[in-house]
Length: 348
Image (cartoon, one colour):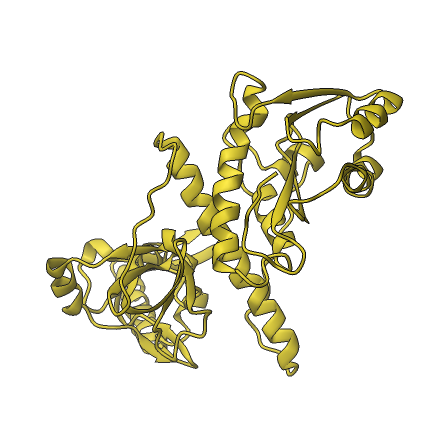
């Protein structure tokens, strides 16, 4: 159980249930004062009814897991309970290795969503189970069910503002969780047992990792870039900061600290020489300077784009769908291709 999270109603903890074979995770918001009968009811409603009775469980030695009531229930149901110190690898190596990653990203997630993390916990559970696990080489969803689900809201707005708000919020929450999870896995891979998050002062500027910001140009190279720098307006917690964003960026302004990085004077100077993205229909796009080449990939034509203000090494392959606002460049390139074809035909 992960305890002492920001209080959301009666909840201040998360019960984490992990299947040691598939790594599938079930997350249940609970109170730190959870009683054994309530725990048994959670197991019935969230685990046993769907997956049946486990042969064996491994949990820490907290009183809620190791008491007379639950032991008696387990005995009647034929479940073999085992107990270990929290995150003690000798107890159950496979299962316990999962928990530090889960705890780290859940704490980061709850810090960003301090007042309503319970509401978005299902998205957190979905995101974790939908990510590839290093121990199995596949996502928990794939390992358990044999298929990979998706949760990608359409970018086409409706005429129902409430529906747009909900789907946009779902998308943002998924992106925040994915970022936190990626940072957690990287931290453990690098062998960092404890995290020392960077901190920012109010008024300080910070780069924002653009991987999780939905810009219309979904160029792999450009979306790996940092956005900003943006001024820090407020420290929400050690794990989250509020940034001053331009009005054209219609995204939530509170970000997990793992998405932020410090600004150095020399790199800021270099960045200021780059042209900023332009705004189209309320969203930001990078400006196309020209089209350098084309190719067919999986039945779709892609074009090698030279971005204005960026060197040729920054050029990226883009599908035609990403070039709606570069029609004149596309037309010019296609005319050049036609002329080349005609000249080649004349030479035959």
